[in-house]
Image (cartoon, rainbow, N blue to C red; front, side):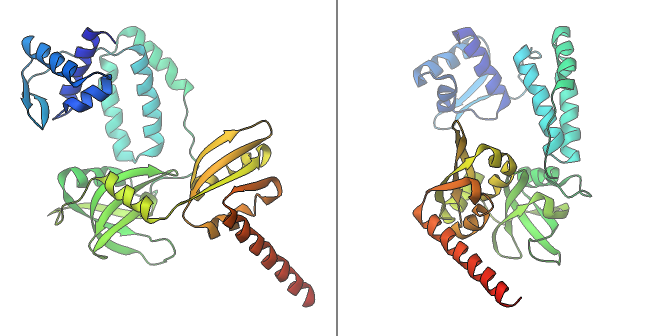
Length: 320
């Protein structure tokens, strides 16, 4: 990237955030801090009202705006891909708001980009295997995001796994994340007086209250790191025949799938498993065309299960 394009990109980033740190700019554009300072100085000399505070970062004075940004064809294509994902993996309220934003984006595209976008819309489709939200609740994600940004408490009706009765919860959402086809929110639960993980499709009703958060929460990434560390995850590696692997495309994500290596006749899969006992039971479905590479303790657990199965079958024969 030449210097002119880089300085323009820095200006756009300054307009997109309230505060931008020099280190973040250096990492994004792979330049030194000295170069960042020089580029910021050039913008200031050109008349851009940049405010800099040591140890905090840079910001642009309120009210300053660039003329409408012109998008490249490559950028325009990514909008359509993102729009297709938003249609499938967000709630109706968020979809509607994103669609409104897309109309504004498309309005500033050149004629050639508009034609390209209209053509591409019919050639991208996203398929999903599960519904990320309760069918009768169309604003779960939108309310959670409002709750986080406005620091207002939310009330939800939640269907916990393994329990028939619904529970009413008063929560303070910390953040949201997407995993295994579902959205989750980590939130402080007033009922449990602790942090809990709530899955989006089990939230049957949600409403935003006018009550402020009663607690100050750490960033979401800190909670996720603690969650994964507390699970004592174990590395599991198995080799599965290609034909059998086709039948577990979605299932594998529920058992901690992280990566795979494709060979001539098989696929070597790696998992981070929180429970080897549960993984051993699932592995039995694959056992006729798979083998365990590691750990050895998983092999022992599978052997014990096979012995138990054999003993159960023998007992069944006795009672015939």
